[in-house]
Image 1 (tube, rainbow, N blue to C red):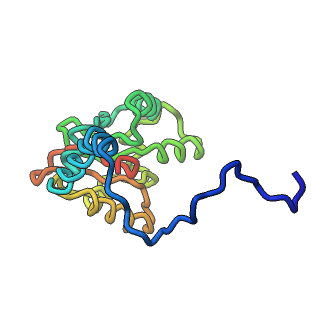
Image 2 (image 1 turned 30 degrees about the horizontal axis):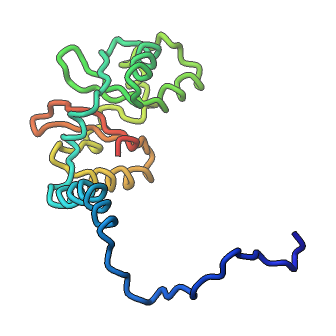
Length: 186
């Protein structure tokens, strides 16, 4: 087709469409299709707008959190993180207290710095190289009642800080660990 030629229609258009004109009433067939196809979606949207926003606790109950002991090796943690398709593992002591969180970025940093795959989680957390050791975890803790938009704002705020881990710890008021929330969960 030469550049000066234009596309030819077999039938001319009756008239140019008037985008400002009111929309014609739906035909009976169109009304049936709307009712059959759109009504469940419309009802679901209307119901979702009446529900309270999803909380971090509700999300954590749907997702698993990898929990490892203090003597777990970095290699063990990588295996568990990959097995459960997560990005971090909470590390707990013998009494169940939270010692910190080891993220996939921690593991990459450990290997890049020449740490052995048999390095214990507690040793890595005590080297002050981990993104979420115990002293940082308290500042990055949210309660299960926190809504997801608040959690996203907290992640955004801490993303500009030195730790910048992209994870939040979710704990009950009494300190009981509920899970580790990743930015990917949001």
